[in-house]
Amino acid sequence: MTTFTSAKADQWIKDTFPGLPPQPLRPAHHVSAPVGWINDPNGLVFFRGEYHVFYQYYPYDTEWGPMHWGHAKSPDLLHWEHLPVALVPEHDYEAGGCFSGSAVVKDDTLYLFYTGHNEDNSPKEVQCGAYSTDGIQFTKMTQNPIISSPPKGASEDFRDPKVIYKNGKWLLVIGTSFDDLGSAVYYSSQDLTSWTYEGVLLQGTSGEGTMWECVDFFELDGKDVLLSSPMGVPGSKTKWRTGRFESGTFHVEEEGEIDDGPDFYAPQTFSDDKGRRLMIGWMNMWERTMAEKPEGWAGALTMPRELGVVNGHLIQQPPAEWEAASDTLAAPGPVCLLEKTAHPGDEWTLQNRDSVLHFSLRSDCLLVDRSNMALGDQDTVSIPVSIYEKGLVINMYLDHSCMEIFFDQGRCASLRTYFSSHDFTAEGVDQIRSLKNI
Image 1 (cartoon, rainbow, N blue to C red):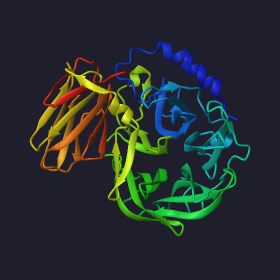
Image 2 (cartoon, helix red, strand yellow):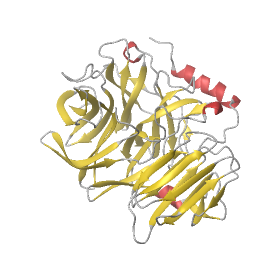
Image 3 (cartoon, rainbow, N blue to C red):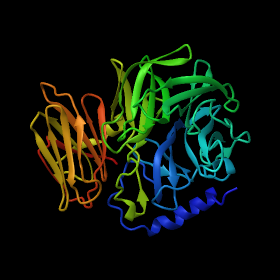
Image 4 (cartoon, rainbow, N blue to C red):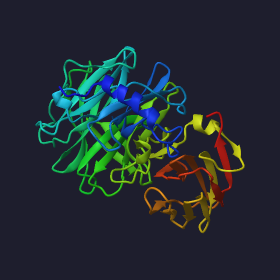
């Protein structure tokens, strides 16, 4: 047993949060940890009329540490309430962390599935489960680990189980690699505790990652969809693939990047009571600057995005709840929507007293220049775009240090944009909307 407990983590948060310095960089409506470090979203689920988000969490520092599962819920995808820490790495098989995973509801019970990590063990990663009848307090399965080793020939990098119900049985899809080729394999079960290995769902080729993390698999608009976050690929090259699940394998028909920005990784999806497929990702990337650390927290999640498949391509849009909250406004604020219909050669800016964020549309890309920002990564981001005769419609959602740019009829780019104060001016945009009632 380790020294980590949920009670210890919750007490640390309760004692530490009131003493944090002012937090002008903290987003109002994107999930961020109350204190400490956050990365991958986990266990996204709609349970008893509310949206639940779990996340990789280390409460004791603004650096990565042995992973816990933080937990928040929302009635409307806009207002988030933090709940007690759901999982902590207490047993030997998970002493290095309760790594990423997913959630399902069965018989009005909420089940979590995650990877137990211990670098000193071999294999170092095993798959585990926990359950809750109230959605707050979780009990780990006595059968843990429920999958004690990777398939024959697979890497010990074997993590991030996504559990779904398909074709009359539960499937657990998980990332690994064979001979340094990123892969997704899967298991089946009737009871969520006893799992049978079924085979390789899809194996990547050279250049598509040495290992696939945070795989997701679901049906949408008549297509099967596979998401992955490959390791060993420069930048945050998260991938979607659409196709057909036939004869036990996935047959790819179309593929592309999930998000075109530099600050995006490890997305996960879930369905709600409206039948929507929603996605949330980590709105950062490894080895990026996190200017919020002096405020006592590090990392954030993206806004929820509604997914669709059109002509075989995955598209994403802001959820209706965010769109319904927009209202006209004469000046920008820390939470606002900036709208622009742009043509090649157009330029526009968002700035305050010490930072300038500059946008310019070229014939084949949108350039976002962060080199004159006082905080965060100082770079120029190139986002590939398609130009339309009537112009490129661009909607930029700003929530303090989080910006998500929707464009090209269903694409998105995530960027952290650190403005230390909220005395914004905007030049060259068509319209600015506040987000009312939030």
